[in-house]
Image (cartoon, rainbow, N blue to C red; front, side, top):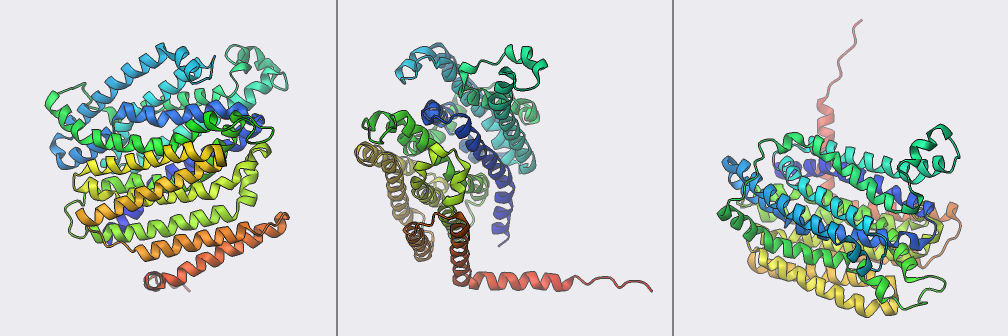
Length: 515
């Protein structure tokens, strides 16, 4: 149980930076969708930002996971492993970024965003800075320096949010002479209104640069070092994981790459394909709540389970963790889906027509999170090639279904394709895992919670209530009843837990006051 508590504690710590960070980023959606009311204005941002995870993966080659493995098992050589991994990432980042910058004009034309080569350059630099600090961040995690990790991430996020407000609200208003006229000459020196949504990229890039002084101590002892045998060992482990993650990125990002070119003209009356991409991309961000739960869990789970790879109790612990992971994520899914009537008000009015995709996207992320959990079997048993094959299968399903469904269903087809791919990957991984690394997962409870949650969301969606004063309390009551039902079903866990809490409280005896 102490191991479970350690994981929960680390998840909470990493979750602080992830949850608050994503929440603050999410609060930028109302800003962006109101500053740029024309839905097509944000289309290039949606698409270009979707390329950053791919670039980041190509820069890092999943070497942060290789660092976890070899730094955990070779503690005396941890500095050498750090030097090797960071040297590889630095080399790739500099070379690839230089090529992208040189070819930025051609890339912009190829992507059908002519004149946006500056945005292409900023995207490449964002990915490069993220890649270079990925290994120092991994070092913080393996050294259990969660507080430094959290502080650094939060400073980056706060700066990013502040710069978004500065470039998109403050600068335009000063530039137009609405207030602070004495600052107008200063703002004129660097502000160009024609850049528009491009300032979202610039804010991200400037915020990333703050990582380097904040992580200076984590770079300590670094020496550029490329020892061929060690490099080969690291790449032999990380390359299959990189291919797996690449396929996973294709799985998650294909929708934003395919929607604009595959959507038939006039599919949505009065909207262009750029408008549809802008709507879908910003409604997609409402699924960030599920993604942040998964990401914060992964930050803690990777080093936690690697450090217990030889523990005979690891399978049972993994099963218990997965059960509660599903319970928490189902509650997130149901809570957000039932309350889209008021949560949807946070995005601009012109973007709300795409809210119907949010429940499916949340469910797809939930299933994908379960896949990440059960995928530990091939990481712990060094059979990472299985992960590559499974994720490649999922990517193939995503690509095929997007091609088939987008012309028929529009952006709803993107959500269906993502969900179908996640289910295929999860089921395949579970079946193979039972053969190679058996884990006593509670499959029946997982299916009950997911199916019951889906049924409740569907029934609630069929009852339209236009009055928010009625719909909000109604949906809140439904959510609370569903949560109460879960508590009853899991009473065997909660009753002993409450008893322990009461016992601890009874041990605290207040001091008697003096006369």
